[in-house]
Image (cartoon, rainbow, N blue to C red; front, top):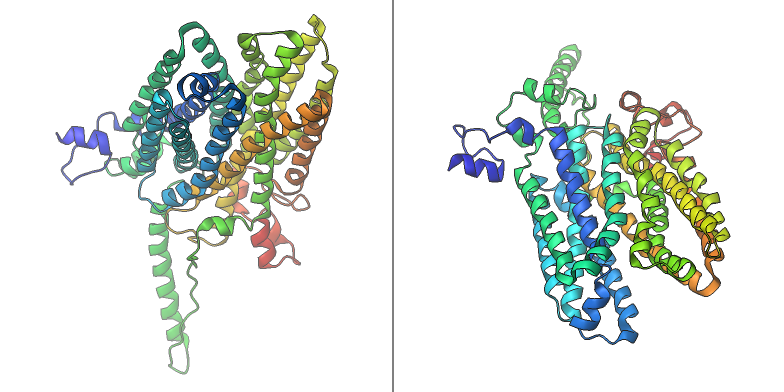
Length: 524
């Protein structure tokens, strides 16, 4: 019974409790990364897989008239985005104040299962809306808590490469889900789509139950054993909570010793309190402090642009290829493969961000995408050359967006780490990674709302060419703040590798004699 309890909870019930089965494997970086990638893919997949069946649900099951279907589809999309917008900061705050990242992940899993069941069985618009709300809330938990757990696990040195794998999972989910949903719905019917969804959910449930956080594993493993399992982790320990306790104890000892020396050396014999510095923990959530960072605001803007560009395809590409090339739903889904293939390079881009900094991959991605967006206006009629041109341009846009996303995700970690280096302990013992990624996912959700509306409205009112031009210019607008702020102010000598960031967390700001502490705070 003890083994079963430890397997489910991951906690040590009492000193005599046996370690969980396969403890090292279940708390390893590889397994935790795989679990989070599957969770992200599952969440995005469940969001996209029902897109082909929503019109059927509205008309045949919920009794919505054909003339109102498009309006209700927009409502369902907006409800999901709104739940994600509201839920991301809240779940981030909760995760940073919870003793375990695993518990919020399991809560999010319950919301995801509930959402899928409701959408499968819904025969009213109200139940469809509630199901979409639960889906948005589960997505908020998966993203904020999952990304924070990865930072806790791998540290700063490898976070770019690690988030590259997450970015790959996200992109695959976005682009593969509508394709599979359309094919399965056309060949096997309504419920077959949800059978596929429930099968993926079972895998996700098993992985989340088996996962054990590294800080839980340390209840049984010696520090030396744990460190050998994560020998390639960041030189900045991801387990800063435990390190902070040791460091705090050492600092207290040093402070006391210094105070004694001051008392002994004071000729008047009076005691004077030695100046001590303790971290000021604001009563306000850490996200408000983070939002004062120009670097973070630049990263959030880049995320809005990237998500808008990626999600804009969902609203215009299927209708465009249907009207121009007379393709059916399967062909409209297969065209997205041109965007999927480049996403496999995301881990390589993340590795480059870890090694050389995130600025130039992000800037290059947005700038590189601009001409190819504009050149989409050349695709105007039905011919083999036009089909090849469309696929080639989509592939090049996919390469560009793949360059931008891992760096933007990693930049969030770099910023939080730099702020903690400025004032150790400022965000409390649990840090602020979940809240930071809550802001990131909020920006991403905003982008997924803006992109389809922008692309659909401009294409409908002004045509395909104007739509491609406007989104190309929007991509360029994403590059400018990233050029100035991502990785640190461009006019400063900025740290690139994890070692440099650890040695110089302010990215060169403190080397400027004219820089004030407020400048350093806002820049980082």
